[in-house]
Image 1: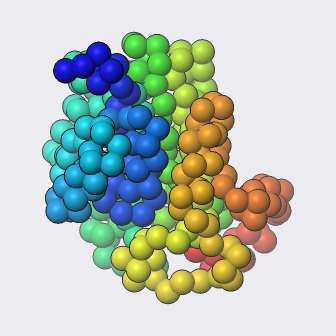
Image 2 (image 1 turned 180 degrees about the vertical axis):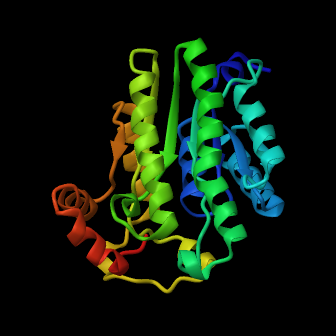
Length: 258
């Protein structure tokens, strides 16, 4: 192993097989990070690992895991906390699309979504926060959503939790050398909508480019920002949502989807 490889930082990205997670993996590799790629689809992960290894001369480890399974989640947490193979950047990106509203959905599906969207973020952030604080450096990125600022079912509630949790963890880690950033995108041109079985809503100007989104987020991470809201349109939306009466936000929430 060369000295260069031994000192290269490592980033672990969940939900890395597609969409925003895949874009994080590509851009972190381009910035000189080795990767640990986490998702359920082994074939996609191995194809991405081969691409990143060939294009950027980094190492790319594949870790297949369904984060709604507690045993699989613990295996990822153990990898995050491994002192012999430190993770310098954690990106909690794994998603869970919902086709139905809360009361029309099976509660087992809601529980699985809850585990992926909130419990996995909690468990992996704890593993990373403890390990990174001991080393005096690290970055945690939790992918939330503009949906967290509205009131639109359990997905919206989960993302509100992710944002508030990230803010609290950032305060707890202040001065430690470890930063926490909640990324709050709006509509983004990925396969998320297709895989969730959701039709594409909203006008074209409200849709974000994933490459620009991730680039802007990584710049915000470098600046130590706790909240990263990509796009002027969504900065305006979030600013408005924070001052509007909650009764009005609730009445309009049915019109808004991530």
